[in-house]
Every structure is written in C-alpha cells, then in structure tokens.
Length: 193
Image (cartoon, rainbow, N blue to C red; front, side):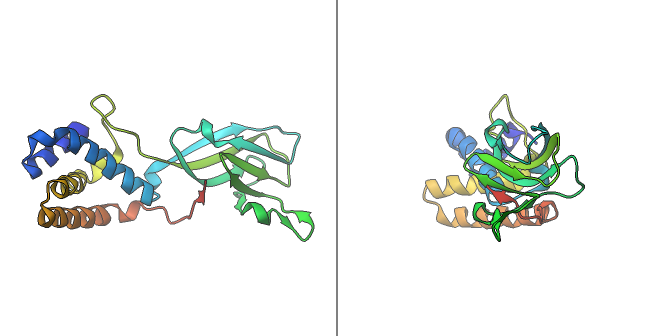
C-alpha cells in the first residue's frame, strides 16, 4: 500500500473524513516513531567514502548521509573486519592510541586504523522520510499497512476523546506490528550519534 491508501484505511477505521489532515500527520508520526525506536535491516544504507590514504586517523562528516540516524558498521578497504566502536574516552588506552576503532563525536565519525586505507565502507541506519502525495512509499506500508492505519487511527480516537477505541486500536496495531516485523530487527547494536 502507499501513503494515500493507508490514510484512506485510517479514515475508514475512524469514520472521520473531516480529520484527513490529522490522519496524514498521524500516519507519518507513527512510521517515524516506529523507525526511531527500532533498528531494521531495511533501513540500512551502505556507502563508500574516500579517505586520505596517507593518514592513520581522520573524520567523516555524517551530515552528508541522507536522514542519518546511527552507525551500524565502519570497515576500511584494507582489512576484512569492521572497526570496533568505542567511546571517545577509550581511544587512548595505556598511554597509546587504540587502532582499528571509531567513535561518533557530534556530527563526525572519527576513525583510527592500523593500516592506511583508501576508502571506508560505512553502513548506517536512516530515519523515515516524510510521506505525502508525491513521496508516498515506505517499506513499512508494504509489510504492515493495517498496523500503521490502526496506530494512526488510535491517535485520532485519542484526540477526539474516545479513549476506549484509542487503546483498542493502539494495542491491536502495535501487536500486529511486532509480529510482522520481529524478523527484520537488526540484532547488532548501532553506535549512537
């Protein structure tokens, strides 16, 4: 389903065509909240970034990545394993700089390698895009359209004072969402920005 179809489904559930603008906002808010609270394999973008091949440390601006949420992995092209994520305080250990590590500082990813490299492969999670009539698709709408519509409808029921319907649709929608997406959760903890 697309954005308009899920919005229409939520309108049907609520019986409130007068609330279509609020329902559109509720559909977007629902998708954003679900993506914000979970890391799904469907939200990972893999990219390659050129780096200075004469240095052992550097940084990459994370602002260049569209809808960046958090880092999943960083791997230089010269080694087979990913760099270890560390906190900024743990880069220096026993009066030495740790190698093959990275950390996030503000909007930058800082990396330290033991062998110089030409590129870094970076995998990162993305936030959900804002949907509208022209940009109207998201993978959650294909997998759990009914759950998204029910969760959006629950917000509308809550806003008009129908707490019983709000609770029933929130429970039903969230249960359906969890059952349908459990296999898509990424079990590898990302590094927060």
